[in-house]
Length: 462
Image (cartoon, rainbow, N blue to C red; front, side):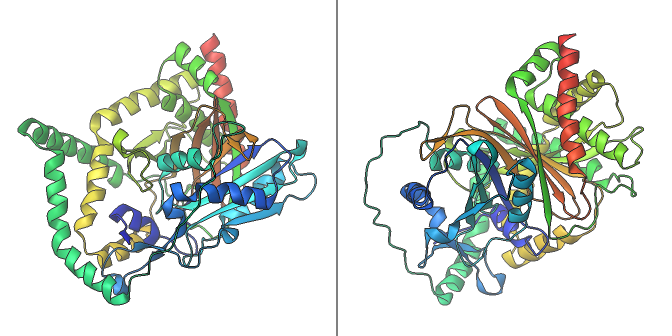
């Protein structure tokens, strides 16, 4: 039995019939597709490396404590690996429609919170792998690590046949769950304080921690108070259905832009995304004059020693995408200056500490607060933009090479459009999620992203 962290539990609590809190990816593989049984055997051979894949969530009565992970006594890999095919002609449109439909379905809380869909029928004899994993299990970075565990790093890896002697542990009784929760409530606040003091041991470390925290909170408060235009269709109530689209670029192109115009990879990526939002707003007849699109930007705070742990270690910064700037070079310069300022302000540090302090809150209030917070109307955040570095070497599944990969990010609250960026083997691809009813035009955004990268390349070459 393993208790969730406060952040992991929050991702579980805010989920409802409209806020689906699973992250995912779509991998395109060379053909021919493997047989279903062959693929299941490959995944089954990796399960001992990822124990969470055979565990389900167990809630504590009355939300007296955070949920726990327990072994699923009825685990069946056949339930989690699905098999489907695209209708003719098996093109990009058919695949995107399928992904939107699959991602609009909630994961079954009574079973381990993941699924994989083998998709046949893609053009050029390709096939796809659509994966879904609940955000309470992994964040984007640990999810990438998970990908390198499930897939192979060479076409024909040398497999050692091992006997998987996994036997599920007996589920804890309700009495045990309540008893251990009551005991933990007396211990947990002390443990949080003790860990915090250990992390900031020494006078200089303590002073630096307090200084960063004060600076970060000060930078976040104005953003929390500032209001965005009330007439934008980027924010508002969302429904249960999803659309999904993608855009492509390469790391080589980003490096050319950096060499010619300066900035970081994130600066270049956000500049291209800004062009996409500018096109989207103009196509909707919304004014962009002097306008910004405010984005929540998740930031991994996972240390090198925490690699391989499949839980959430993520904080956030808030970036303002200057859609009112038409010139791509000026747009990049604006974002570059802003991101440098955000790093100096320590926003991500403040966000991480404020999140960890939720461990002090009684889990009943934590659950209620997360659910209410996800439903409150808000217009301060217009979108979410998350950039996850992936493996830069080819990956294989049952001897089939993964040609490209695209990410999926969930929507939450009043945010109707979200963007995830994933790098793999020299490519830098974007996955755009839209609310089905209020964002039917996300294709304009994805084309704008590609056009934004093209105009940056042209400016860099000049």
